[in-house]
Length: 218
Image 1 (tube, rainbow, N blue to C red):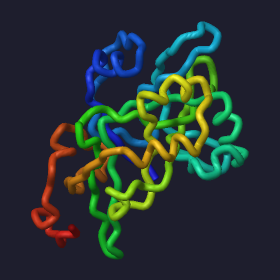
Image 2 (image 1 turned 180 degrees about the horizontal axis):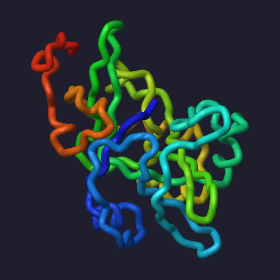
Image 3 (image 1 turned 180 degrees about the vertical axis):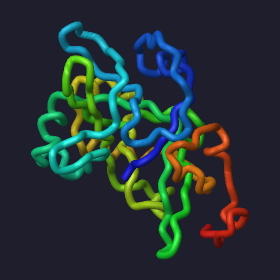
Image 4 (image 1 turned 90 degrees about the horizontal axis):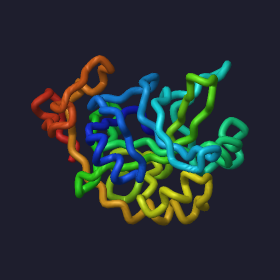
C-alpha cells in the first residue's frame, strides 16, 4: 500500500514537468498522510487543457475509507472501474514511505528516485461537490529493487505517459512494463514518521535503526 509520501519540489519544477502553470506556492510537506489535501493534476475536457487542484486523499464510503486502489482489479472493482475510465489524475511526490515488518517491529523506509527527481503517482479522483474532490492512489507490485521492504508500491506514471494517462488512456500492461524500468533507492528513516503531526526535512534523512534501539535489518 501507499500510506505516506512527501512533496517538496517547487511549483516551477512541477510546472515544467507537468506542462501546466502551477501559479500557487506549494507548501513543502515531508509527511503527507491520508486525509490531507494534496496537489492533483487532471485534464479538464471542457476547457481542453490540463488543470490542477487540491484534493483530499481518501475516498469516504459508507463502509470504508479507501486510500489506495489495486491496479490488478481497478477496471473490474465496482468502487473504482468508472473512475478508471473517466477520472484519472497525477499526484506529484518526491518519495514515499513503506514499512518493513520482521514479525516484531516495523521499520520505516524512505523510497525515492535515484536521480532524486519527482515521481508522479497514478490516481483516481472523485468529484464529491463543486468544492470537494477525493482521490485514491493506485498501487501495484513493488519492483525488484525495493520488494524486500514491502510487496506493494504506488503506480508511477513516467513523463512520456502523462498525456495519455490524463486523457484516461493507456493500457495497464504498458504502464506495468514501464514501471519495471524505474530506478528507485531507499534508506531507513526515523520512527517519528509514524506520527502524523511530525513534519520537516529531517524526516527523510537516513537514520540507522541501531540508533533507535532496533536491530539492523539490511
